[in-house]
Amino acid sequence: MLNQQTLNHSASFSGIGLHSGNRVNMTILPAPANSGVRFRRVDLDGKPEIEARVENVSETNRSTTLAKGNVKVHTVEHVLAALAGYGIDNAVIELDANEPPIADGSSREFCKIISAAGVVAQAEKREFFTPTEPIELSLGETTMTLFPDENFKITCTSADKQGRFTQFYSTEVNPQTWEKELAHARTFCFFEEIEFLFKNGLIKGGSLENAVVIRDDAVLTTEPLRYREEFVRHKMLDIVGDLSLLGRPIRGHVIAARPGHAANAELVKKMVEQINKPLRAQQTFSPPPGKPVPEPLAAAGGAMGIEEIMKMLPHRYPILLVDRILKMEGNSIVGVKNVTMNEPHFTGHFPGHPIMPGVLQLEAMAQVAGILLLKRIEAANQIAYFMSAEEVKWRKPVVPGDVLVIEVELTKIRGKIGKAKGVCKVDGDIVSEAQVTFMLRDA
Image (cartoon, rainbow, N blue to C red; front, side):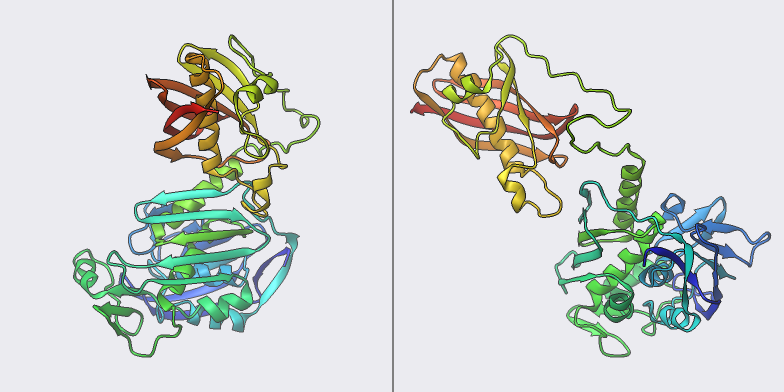
């Protein structure tokens, strides 16, 4: 569906809030195009509203809380997931308490009332978000990556700190798969967490009617598990709800390990950062309108062209990873590698979203370092062999169109063995770095 959608008519549900334990009545109303999803507290003077946007996230402890001034709405992720799962862009969620009803701990009851109300297309077109480059996140024990894709997909692994009930699941998310594969997965917790949650004023409305409890190797529930992988599928349900806080549908593949609400929100913030950045200009024969022509990288003392580099290094296509030496002074050297779509590794790394492998950036550092060592000791008929790498860090993806500037400084030379600090940069930002060791041997 390329057009925006809302409900055909209002949908209501009543129950208790998971963390507050309060009775709450909820009504989901149709809303105009381009208005997005927002919560309305009808129990407060003036019926204040909070937009379901990541900038309004105030807490992510065990659930996602939205706040605007002194007005808060807790545990929004399950109802947001239901709306996002069905592709609803615009709606008003009215509440007469501070959180939606928890129902059975999943989105099943919300799906029922939305299905009964019906979904209707609106005249305005949707604005999708497709990442221009992979977005990576590491937060505590959680890792998440969002890759560009034609559809919205989630691949997820979940486990607790002891590795119990480790589960994996992957699916494309659309209205059909959402209702069948994710919507019925219930929230869960471990038995040893319950006392802590109660002491901190949480799960006052929690029971086996709306949550699954794991105690040692036993699963406590009022009914059999709804899916073999119900725990990881509920984590994916939360991801659908939390990522809807971007305010637009996503065309991308989320790969997550041990996700949680805090990391989900941080991933959305990274998406917002990418949206707000000027789009990377696509590689063309001439610069795009309005973008100044970049100054050529200046060469200095010790500069070398590709012909001289090939006389010093035995490497050839496809593993010659330095095109030019810009300068060489004392124990320092700066080389350049132009990254193009013609690189053979882009065929499989990765189809649809090409990224230069980190190990090849490491190899580029070693080749530039080898040139410097060969020059420093004036060795003839020698080859620099890469021996080891330490303190390796890959910070940002390198993609076609980037100019990889490789800066290397020799830190130690003993005989024919050298150690060096290497840094790769793109547009002045460090993308990778390492300490490398290599030695000279007869060619």
